[in-house]
Amino acid sequence: MNFFKRFIASFFAVIAAFWFMGIVLVLIIVGLGSADVAPSVANASVLKISLNRPIVDYKGGSGDDPFSMFFEETIALDEVVAAVQAAAEDDRISGISFETPFFLGGWSQAETLRNALIEFKSSGKFIYAYGDSYSQKSFYLSSVADSLFVTPTGFVDLRGLSSELTYYKSFQEKSGLRMEVIRHGKYKAAVEPYLNDAPSKENIEQIQELIDGLWDVVGVQMADQIEVSRSDFEGWVNDLITRDLEKAKELGLIGDLIYEDQYEDTLKRAVGASKNDLSASSKLNTISSSSYFKTIKSTQIDSSDRIALVYAQGSILYGEGSPTIMGQETMNKALQSAREDRNIKAVVLRINSPGGSALTSDLIWREIEKTAKEKPVVVSISDVAASGGYYIATPATYIFAQPTSITGSIGVFGTLPNASELAEQWGVSSYTLSTHERSATYSPLRPLSDSFRAELTEGIEQTYQTFLERVASGRSMSIESVDAIAQGRVYLAPKALELGLIDEIGTLNDAINKAADLAAIDEFKLREYPRYKSDLERLLGDLPSASLSIISSKLPSIVSDYLNFWETVGGSENHDYNRIQARLPFDLKIE
Image 1 (cartoon, one colour):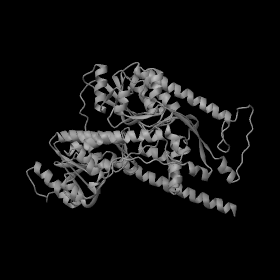
Image 2 (cartoon, rainbow, N blue to C red):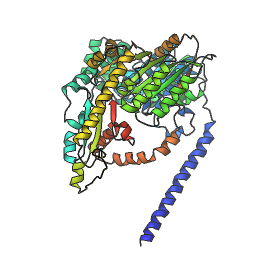
Image 3 (spheres, one colour):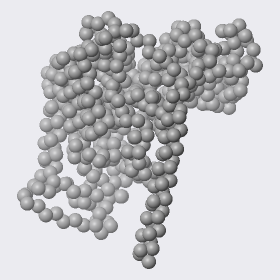
Image 4 (cartoon, rainbow, N blue to C red):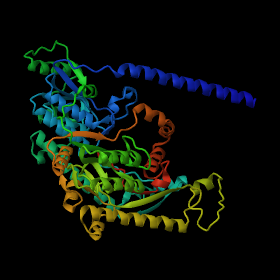
């Protein structure tokens, strides 16, 4: 009977393996067959921007990957911006149709795209926006359009900013699974969800300051764009005026209320206006931003001088990197290549990271420090460069941040899972043998010993001191003055500028121009780094974690949220390397 069971199991395993290999083979054939088919751009086309997946700043050349159509999980902001910029100069493109009901990126990413759209309008071409609904970020982007159309039964969500925090103290007490936490910094609240059932007054203070400061930026930008006073705009937001679409139209917040077929006719007329043909009966030619990006030919000037644009994005974890994880292997290879290339005269480091492993941050910091000693390194902060993300910025020659960027969070913490109570409940026990008094360091099946807690605390204090020294050296400040503004506190860019943590408020283009000035070059080409694995390679490599995600998705939300949070702050496969964290002091979601 056992033989028969093993035979049946092996049989189905082999069948499943051949089935999976067959699917991969089909995808390879289809992918390779489509790899050389370049999209075509018809005359009088409309560039359609529909951003329906999470946004990353950069994907590392995966736009050249023939399998990206099957496995793409993210959208590269740099590609969308490049498409908008190229479309402004392309006589075949008549205008832009922005159709993104929910923008799944950060506020600084939204601001970057918004600036590109505003610049596009100077070409004299139209921008129309359409949606059944508009999230707040989507409305922020769409407000630059010449006309913003909404489905008559749709909605526009304009209500101001909020940030929800989730806490797990009581859940841990009931489940028997908890985290052992050691931290430095009274504002280092990344581990608060494990310790409390409500936020501390320090955390409330800093988050309220962040969302108020962020709204001061984006609220003013929206009010200015629709040409109303800030007081009137704030009144409309408080009254949720956009829930009444007719009223919102009357006030000029939105345009006509029309259905999709009517919107297509509107686009046809807009295109026809540029051809002196106002008929809505002609065919509408559209091309997606991703397809159009593949048609763009380099317009960079012919120069041997280059500036390296290195993207440092995602949580910082020990090992290899990806578009959503910053690992020292990928980052340091890119930095070394940029440093050793004689044609590269300066480096721009575009950081979008909440931090992560303190060890990995320091390994990357060292490579940036070495590079900055040989050529100018200019940092440009995207949505966030906090904690470890700011740590790696400190050796730079000059630091830019956008008005909506978040930075700072100079602090350190450590976490270790403690399942001793859960193990006891289920009758699981362990026994450890060792050769020396402190040979056995830690086990999740028993409480943290006083000696090991003291050892970990010492490591955290040493790491915090090193962090202070890195900032003090890089920013020409005393350790005492850095410590006074550190303690894990985060800052919006204008406050960070006031405190001396950054040098200037500006865009990525401002950072590139600054790098050229520091390198004393007038003409140059950009070279982007790093190069990541293709979408297919990442999919095959992530199958085990994908299975875990499927399992996690079936659990109650409080449990799956807890597991996801655990993975973020300390549950990675390289936990020994990632045990001490320099990370943003909370899982920040501002909507």
